Structure formats: C-alpha cells, structure tokens
Amino acid sequence: MIKKIVGLFSCVLSLTASAQIPESILNDLSSVDSNRIKAHVAYLANDQLLGRKAGSPGYKMAVDYVVEQYKKMGLQPAGEKGGYLQEVYLRNSKINPATAALTLTLPSGEEKQWQWGVDYVFTPHPEKESVDFNAPLVFVGAGFDTPQINFEDYRNIDVKGKIVVVLRKIPEDAAANVKLHLNYPATAQAFAAKHGAIGVLVCNYTNNPVVFKTSATNYSLNGINASVSKSGERVSSAAALGGKIQVAGGLSVQALQQLMQAENIALDELWLKLERGEYVSRPLKSKVKGHYENKFTNLLSYNVIGKIEGSDAKLKKEYVIHSAHLDHLGVGKPVNGDSIYNGAHDNASGVACALEIARIYANLKEKPKRSLLFLMVTAEEMGLLGSGYFTAFPTVPQKQIVADINTDMPTLLAPLESVAPLGAEHSSLLTTVENAAQALHLQVETDPDPSEGRFVRSDQYNFVKAGIPALHIKYGYAKANPALNLAEKVRIWRDAHYHKVSDNLNDSFVWSAGVTYVQVNFLVSYQIAQNPVRPTWNKGDFFEVRK
Image (cartoon, rainbow, N blue to C red):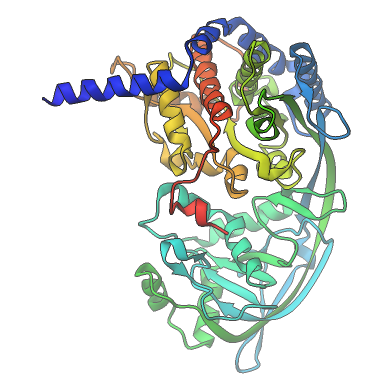
C-alpha cells in the first residue's frame, strides 16, 4: 500500500511539473552547452583579469566581457543612462584608534575612561570622518524587535536619542535562517534605528579578550566596507551604521560587568533570564560620551544589467532577476609563486551559468510573460555591497521585482543529482524548485551545511531583506551512489581552495553538472515568469512580516 501511494504521489508531481513546464521548453534545454560555460569561466578566471577585485581594472575587463555577451545575445540595456551599467560607489572606512575615546559616567557621577580594544571597540563610520556623541544608556536585552517569534525587547521602553546596550543572545528555537539574520550586525542596528536610538553597543557574552582585541585591530587595519549613495550616505554593509545610528560597536564582558555592577544588576542572572526568553529591557542611569575619527578610501565599480522583455502586455512590466556576483578577491601575497585569486569556482562559474541561462531565454521563439533581468553584481566579496546598492537603487521599480534567483559558486565538483534551494522554504518558490527538479529527475533537500551560514552570505539575502522572495540553489549531497561522499569531497575542496589562489580553472570541474545547474535554474525562473500569480511569502513566515 505504501509503495502504491508513493508511486501515485510521484505521478501527480510529474503531471504537475509537466503542466507548468511545456514540453517545448524542456526540449529547448537540450541546447545548453558545457563548452560555452567553460569558455566563460576560462575568460573570467584568466590571470589577465587579476582576480576581478571590485573597482579594479581587472574587474572592468570582466564588466566589458559581460556587456559584450549581452550585446551578442540581444539583451536590452537595463542599467543607468540607457546603458548596461549601474555605477556603484564603494567606501572603505578605517578608524583611528589613537583618537578614539569613550567615557562612562556612572550613576554616582564618577567617570571611567574605557580603553580601546580592552573595554570597547567602535565600528568605523561610513559617512562621517569625525563623530562625537553624549547620550544616556538603555539596556534592551538581546536587541530584537521580532513579535513574530515573541521577542520584543523594545516594548514599552524609550530609546530615542539614546544608546542601546545589547547582550547578544540568539533564540535557540528559532529557524536556522532566522538565527542567521538575527546574528547579522546590521539587524540589531536596524532595530535600534527604527526606534530612534543613536547608537548600539553589543556585548558577546562568550567572547574572550583575545577575540575582542582582534576585532579592534581589524577595524583599524582593514576597516569596514560599505556602498554609499552619490551624496555619501550609507546604502549597505555588514553593519547598518549611518543615518540615525552615529555610534556602533562592542563592549567587552568585563566592561559590561562593570556597567551592570554600577547599576546594581547581576550580569549572570541577567544572562539566565535572557536564556529563558524573559523580558529584561530597562533604562540605565549611566551615560556615555565619546569621540572617534575615520579615514575613507573611495572606489567606483559597476553592476551589469541586461533585460529580456516579456511577451505579456501587462506582466512584462514585472521582473524576475537572475543574479550572480562578478567580483572576486584580486591579488594577494604569493603562495607557491601564485598571487592571483582567480575565483574560477567563486564565482566565474556562477556568472557563466547565468550567461548561459540568458542565452536560452534570448533564443526562445516565444518569450515568457514576465521580463527577465540578468544582474551581475559587484563587491559581493566586500559584504554583498553591489546587490545592496541595487536593492536600494533598483533600475526598475522595486515593487515590480517578483523574485531573485541567485547563482553563487555552484561548486561543480560532481554530477548534479540533488539541489538545496537556500531561502526557498520561506516562500512559494520551494514548490517552483520542486517542479523544476521533478522535470529533471533531481532530488530536493534542505541546506546540507547550515553551519556555513550561506543564507546571509550571498546576494539573495539583500533581496530577502527588501521583501522580495529569493533563493540560491546549492548542490545537494544526496547521491544515487552512496560511495561518492560528496559532502566530504566539498569539505576537502573548500579547505584547500575556497578563497585561495588555487581556485583556478582545472580538472576539478565537472562540466556536465554545469549543464544541469543551468537547466534547473532556468526552469525555476521560467515558471515564475509564466505564472500570472507572483511568488508569495509563506503565511506567517518570519520574512513576510518583518518590517
């Protein structure tokens, strides 16, 4: 009986997939050519491009190549000023620790000078070269404004014009992607800004002094990267610092203990209450004042955007996006005589697959109802900055973007038999992926590497934050042949080559897997482009109700 039911269910799935994906479209997929995919990777990962670092001449060579491909395929320009390009303004901000100062005024009136790198760190400001602040403190627990998961740390407390103190604690029972989102520095800062705070100081209760000192050194030596508007206002970065938020950074455990002791609050007891999910927010009697200075380095880079116009008079004004990041890490210190981070897998392969998807659409005799945008973004390796810039300043109306399908490092190391659509589980996109996989006889599985945090580490995350259903299809590890331990193979490859100069065009690629990867991503976007009903968030999903 069980076998009969399973067989019937499989039959229904096949009929569903066939009903949504015409046979003619499946036939068109036979034109996917692994040689074209390989040729794109060969050019983009060539030493002449010097690792395609955002804003570099080598990156501009990659931009010019993509534009040339768009023109050959007949994609319409969808960038700025009637062209294929969108200018993206990038800024690196480094803090000068010699000028940084933070003074704590205790309830007794006593002042304590906290020490940089020992008691506190500041995140470099991407908008101001010099910052001064003087404000009361408010403790806001874990710093979340998420009634959808019953964490409302800002409930019934006034933080306007004040600096909030956060004790980082991610809810254990939250979904994996929600945890990743809540752990992202920009999230806590966005919640604080929403309620009118001017600053956020976060304490990670599990950090030791060495880790804390390392973060301070990183902010002064490497700084932070952000995309900024033409007038210099922060658009996106790993932190939301800027706008209302004038100071953001961290407090060491010893500094928070000192503060709480002066407030007659037992920090250990506070932590236990947070673990139990209790509301612990409260105003504090202490105040802080401080100063810090930042040094800016500015770069101009580009997103590359082409369009295939839809066939329906109404729906062609809506857009399905295929995105992939075009940049990599540039040139570094020589390792065995090689200093170029070619990024063949990361992400020349993803761009190559997206270009092949564009070619299939360009050659369709009958275009889908909605329009397709092919968005090759810059500065993903600097913190998802190109996609953040696009979602802030889209070249088409943001409300008309219905979905994003992102391709980032497909990891073409073995035949593709299973896919893991990261982020699809939050929306109707999961059903779309299942239909595409069914048509290609692929399995669908959940994220096989949740500890890698990939949901927030690639460009689809910026579309999710903008309220647009999005996904990123990664390799699944389920295999018809269990002897092929793909999880172990990927782990070994990642340890040896990920973000290293050895990520070159070599015999590690299984090009037939690239063909299947192109096909499944194409079928996902085609269904979305054809369906008169837009993709929707699952009812009650965390990202649907997020504000």
